Image (cartoon, rainbow, N blue to C red):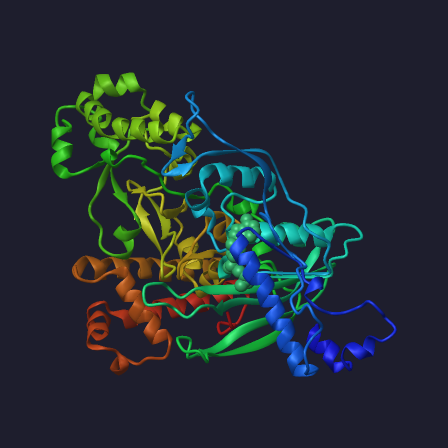
Length: 572
Ligand SMILES: C[S@@+](CC[C@H](N)C(=O)[O-])C[C@H]1O[C@@H](n2cnc3c(N)ncnc32)[C@H](O)[C@@H]1O
């Protein structure tokens, strides 16, 4: 603003507008920490004085620093009457070293009228809010901001508040912009954006940088990456600026090069097809689900345990002990774990028919769940304790969907490579696997194609740097093609061969892992020839027959593209 004024000829250009000056009194701020507020106020004056010296010279009017007190010391996202919790003797009640506070009547604080809002709110992930700010504060924050899901990062409370002001009738606010965590475009955060962008008074993102480096990475801390978003009211196009080159990040003169595209910016900070807005399809309904969640390591039993549980003596028990696979079993090597699965049995029946199993679970799972309930008496914890002999989440819908299938498809929820494979129908999938109740190799083939992988990586989220496959975002809205019988037969044949090839290679070579195979496949896909591979990669390439893996995937991609009626080389 000050630079623009200088371009217009400086303060004199405004002659006639007596009493109008541009100085820090126009710049208001909200800051919880009084020290940070004082520093912010001083920083504004330093900026102002630098500008003054650069454009006007001479000394500014006295007093040089005026006490505007524009940076209000207040909580920007929660207002409430606070009361220290005390016990019967009047002593403050503590929780993990923090005094507990009751927040009465939690509500949104008023923000001063402004034409532009800019901010760099604190970065705290949704799952850390309770631990970092205290459970009492976190609960009050969510109670005051009912529109924000609990898993959203703290910065989203600023974003949503500003969006609310922007959308209000006759709002003086013209734009707002925030620096946020780069996870803003991911599922849990972008719900806030989606709601505001599709609201009755919609707002639009007019500038976004989805992923930008931030601080220099300190020796003992990971490099932080951020996003920047600017929004205006109404339906507008925007500039999407993506970092195409970054160098010297650890120096004081980093080089960051951006490319720019214009268009409607979606809530996932992309331009083009709005994959994030795709709706669940009826045709895919009820087919996929995360696997079971045990809530008790006592359910996992070794070969020795199985004998001790009386599997030879107790009729029916063997059928209740199922092979159990989690993500690592599939991406690395299977541990041959088994789980005791008593879903559908009453407590009395377990005691009567399988007394050893009953005692084992009572001594392990029941004790653990009772401890958990004593520590945090939530409704879920009470429910898990009441049904202690059964997995926490036994997934009845998935069980129904799997009835009659001798095999089904799984993928690991959070995984570097998006790989789908068949598991035998007797195997219990863990919660970190997404299961698809189909025994069709056509389905396996379509899910294994480059087209589905590209879709899933845009529709899903990432955890750290690993893509995450979400049943509701990646599977439910995914449109399968309608292949002709000939196309379907070809897809099925390749998918069967792919599944069998990987299983055989991993079976015959105990040192190989699925991740290892796909790491080398990625190198080949990136243009490496076998002679470019490191000795370790070359070993995997040779033993894992990765060229065949690549050939099968390439053929699958071709056939699946054909089933959609698309060319095989359609860019992702
Ligand atoms: C990432 S720093 C940004 C500091 C400064 N505004 C800047 O841009 O350089 C986040 C600031 O938010 C302040 N803060 C944290 N929680 C707050 C809240 N609930 N209300 C207002 N300010 C808060 C912190 O004290 C901290 O100074």
